[in-house]
Length: 255
Image (cartoon, rainbow, N blue to C red):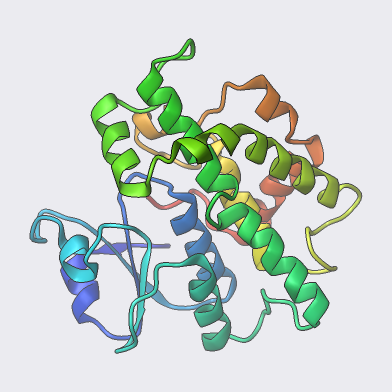
C-alpha cells in the first residue's frame, strides 16, 4: 500500500521517489503511480506536510507542479513521457512501451493525445477553468480563487479555450473507436496508454468515493455534467477504465 513521506524526506532520500498532492487525484500523478505499480518499482511518495517548510515543492523544483519524480542524483522529471522512459529503463519488464517502431509511434501519439499539451487532460482542465471563471449555467467548477490561481499557473490561453471542447470530444471519440472490440488500446498487451486512459478518465467519470476518496471540491470538479462530452465516452471505453483498475492499479486509490 502506498504511504506518504514529507517532501523534505523524499528530497533528501535516494532511489526512486515522487512528490504529489494529498487528496487530489491529479491524472498525471495517478498515471505515474500506475506505471510504477505495474512495473513493481519501489517508489517513495511524499506530499506537503506540516513538517515541511511552506511551499516545499516550489523550493525544490522552482515551481509547484506535480508530479515530481526523482531517481538518485539524476535531475528530477516532471513530464509524463520522461517519467515513463525512466520507469522503462529501471524495470524493462513488463513492457509498457512498444518494441515495434510503428507500434511505438502509435502508442506515444495516443499517449500525447491524452497527457500532452492540448491533449485530453489539458483541454478538459481549460474547460473546467472556463466554467469556474465564467459562472455559467452549470456553476463554477472550482472556487474562483482556486480557478484564478490555476489559470495563471497553467496559462489560460483564450485561443486554446475556444478549441478545448472540440479537442476533448474528438479524443474521446478516437479512444472509443480504438477500444471497440479490443482488450487494449495499442497492440495485444497492456501498454502505458491503457494506464493513461484509466487514470485520466477520472476527470469525467471518477471512481466511486469508496475507491477514490478525493476532497469534495475535487470530486465535484471531476464529475462531468456535459452531455456531449459524456456521450463521446463509449460503454466499452468505460468498461476498459474499470478493468484496468481492477486488474492492474491500486484500489482504493491512495490519496
